[in-house]
Image 1: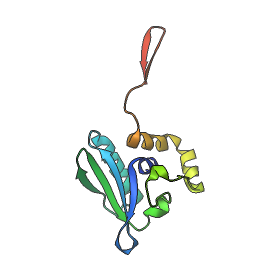
Image 2: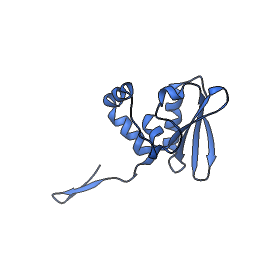
Image 3: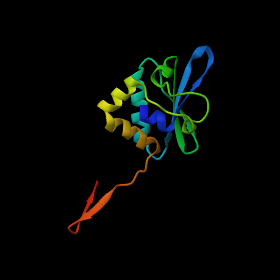
Image 4: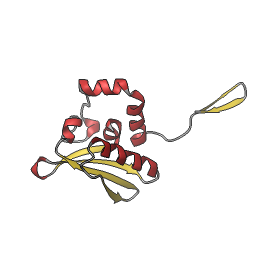
Length: 126
């Protein structure tokens, strides 16, 4: 979820210090949308995940006061112009699950092609 947030997510504050977590997902990948919604729900099952349709994408939105506790990287301005630094507890989680973290980054902003190579006349797809 951290990778998805850092790639295509944001937090915005609403009334009574409630924050909206919003993650934009490409409509071409409904499986990614479903998986992302499931992950958000698994973090806080008491809060629904809303799907807000926009041209070509679906925004997954969930409201909760504690989203900034999980994503202290939020702040004013554009994420790509801010220094994004993981806290110690986040670094530990990423160190324990680097594949899931990188997967979240790729699912949000990565390239979706199969890598391939040819060795000894045989083509291998990865």
